[in-house]
Amino acid sequence: MTSTRIESVERGVEICKKDGIDVILAVGGGSTIDCCKAVATGVYWEGDLWDMVATRHGQLKALPLVAILTPRWMRHILAKDPTSLPRFVKFARNVMGLDGQDELALAHEAIDALEAYFKSTGIPMTLTELGIDREHFADMAAGANRGGKLEGAFVPLTDEDIIQIYEACL
Image (cartoon, rainbow, N blue to C red; front, side, top):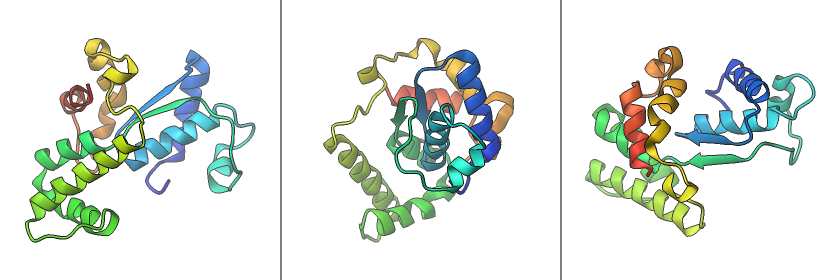
């Protein structure tokens, strides 16, 4: 969890316990999902949360976690910020094992390959498959970006950006 702050995990655990949250919905990339995994486990952890994330424990009890994995977020970021292209090209070459000269096409091919892999595992790929519609998107986006905390993300995101990503996940 290299870019996840322990304070985020602690706050997430606090909210889950206080509000009786019974499932966590993670929308985004690796850091988001890592943070949500730590929160899901931290709800049941007895002791210092830093000890939980810093030490291997094997399988621990955790809240259910639904992750809307990265392909839709990746497409949104790539379209919003062309300067992100080199990172997506690295992903294409180093993670997905793809090669090509047209970097934009390569980035899209990698995203498509990742999405195809996720689909092949049989996991739900849309919010609709999970029974989630757009009714609460504005509130969800406001909560995800409370205090403008996503202004400092890899690519800064507004509430409207977050809603667009949710819409793409339907």
